[in-house]
Length: 236
Image (cartoon, rainbow, N blue to C red):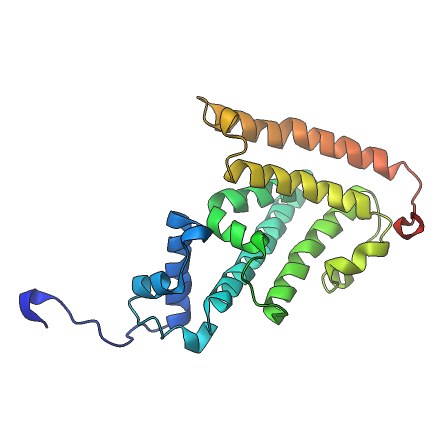
């Protein structure tokens, strides 16, 4: 013990440095956002020297990549859980994953921005790629099912998003993602503040999202399903 009863914190005493750094990083993101995120601050909160995280992450990009990977995994697991509940209750699977997507953004906005900001991440990281492909594959699968298409779920979850370029349903896939991601991003980034900051505004927006917007999405899917398939590669 040091004078005055303080405990000396020299060296590293965590049982799991990687987990401790990720937890510290999540706290910094929640408080300061991506703009105030530094490796030194994360190390300080984890109670280690600034050089200690290099063993697991190498640099700031490595830590951000680990967080983005967790973010994609969380998104996938939350969407799959929502699908399971929808199946059990006879609910709408596509609406379920759209609402799950929004819930992930609202629950961890800092992590969500890292996932989709694509800034400062390690290029070519295999774990990040795996997690991203899995999440996108779920969105593709549920969009295709909503359109009445047969899908091979295992095959979908191993393809890169860029490989969907020749998919006849690409427009519908992008439409669903645009509605879901656009609303989620506008809400957490404050673009909907004129509504969100009014008394009862958040409840109004969430009600519109789960209600009228999802009804419009379902109607669009029904209309698209009735249209003949077209090969997007044929359009110049």
